[in-house]
Length: 328
Image (tube, rainbow, N blue to C red; front, side, top):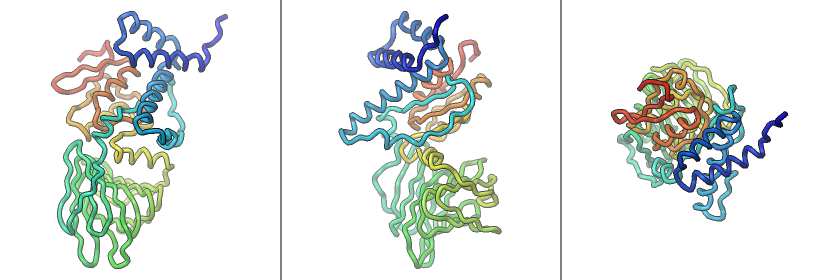
């Protein structure tokens, strides 16, 4: 009776295939051999993706110099969602594309009154006149209305990460959909997308959500409310790794942990005008986990296609994901 293949031997074979893929395109015979190897054991696809991720991480580490510590860039482990191991995926975007999507590191001064906007795929970091900073994600508009009594800003749409410096004489207030979020010293994220709940996440300090029933949010707390309101939801305490994933966009990344493939495609649509379309409902429901460059929808599409046995076809400027038997 044949003995089951050990995880160590699978990882070793995955490393060999990764090295071969790095050297260039496979021949027809090699491609057939790789596909045969991948279908022989459900653990092999995950092993190949891990080997490729480690290879990319190693290349990034060499580029960053001898002081690079990869452990500093790895989020705490989280439980895997249920399902076969082939449905788990960890992929890292290339260093070049990630750098292109990252929020601009240059701090730009903003006067006490005025509007700040970003276009689709653009990020921006600004410093307000009191020293507080705002990171604007893609497709965002923020209005600044400072005066001698209060530091007030308003989020019209999009997503921001705000770091508030203390000012005993003037509280900091962010208005979103008719509600006021008040802070003295805090770092927090607010997301206001069309047709979606207002999403508030506190990273550091405390934030008071004013309203009929005020709610105090502390670090690692999140509040989502129905579309059209900023208050009315129930606050939840979230794990630190959730905070890390939710704030990955500050580094030009998108992080998924078990979201459906169609949900992941919708998230990429926030950052690029190149749309990802999924025709197969079963494929659309596949769970996706991984860290990806927000500016590279084509790379994401190719990565998930390889994992789920799908193909990518460009149709009228869109990236269509489909399994071979699915009609375009």
